[in-house]
Structure formats: structure tokens, C-alpha cells
Length: 174
Image (cartoon, rainbow, N blue to C red):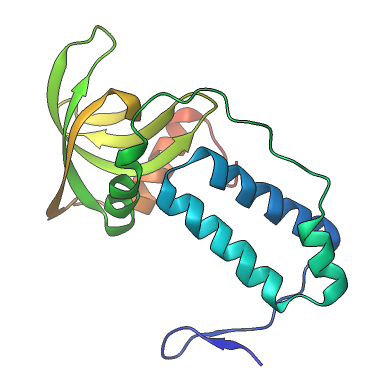
């Protein structure tokens, strides 16, 4: 029996190998330790849902995995903007931002966010910048203000992401 998602969609029952469970657990624990509160809670909820439907022997593997996430190193500020950034990316909405550049100059930009990168010490937004008429990277810790606009950007996120991947020499799935 599957789980009903939306009209016309059905999620079939899933079964994982021990190593797949280790990968999922490790990833969810990393997200729970290194992102904003909303995404961290969703990672914990996802693990709980997975654990609730596993057979007893695999439930034990899920909770007793020997793969651990070390304590996070200091991540610079900006985590409070992450939920709004994810929402704007999902909805393909333009953002009005105030941003400090590398020389600490304050600037206002209209950007089309297409991806978030989570690095050890910083979070980066990949976006089309209307001012520079090109794809740019913005450090989340340098955001001063952010406003999600109702306006959608004119290009599809998928096309912009593909353009960025080609520019950066990244193959799909990396």
C-alpha cells in the first residue's frame, strides 16, 4: 500500500538497504546541525517518518548508525534568511536585497535566486543579478535585508541552473 500525496500521485512503499539508511541518516543529521531551524526540524521529521515504517531490525540500524556528524565549525551569520531564500527559489520569485560586497560597500540588487550552496563556513546564493546582467554568487552572511517579491523571474529556474552549471563546469548530479 502506498501513501496518497495529491490527487493522481501515489508514493509506493520504500525499502532501504543498510548503507542507504546510513547515507540518509548522515545527510539528515548534517542538515539538522548546519542549516536553519525550519530545515533542521524537517530533516528530523523525515528521519522519524522513515523510522516509523521500517522493520524492527532496520529501525535499530537507523538509530544506532556509526556514522556521525562532527560539531559544526563556526558558520557566519545569515541563517535567518534561509527559509525566505528557499521559498523564493521554489516559487521562482525575484528578490530585492541589500548586500555588502567584498569591500563592505552597501548595494541594492534585484536578483533571481536559483540555488543555495552550503559550505563549511558560508552559505551562498546563486542568482541572476539584474544590475550586472549575469549569474552571480552572493554570500548569505553579507545580506543586510531581503524582500521576496511577487514578481516571478522571466526565465525558468531549471534553465538558469543549467546555464550556471555550464558556466561553472559542473555536470548534473554533482
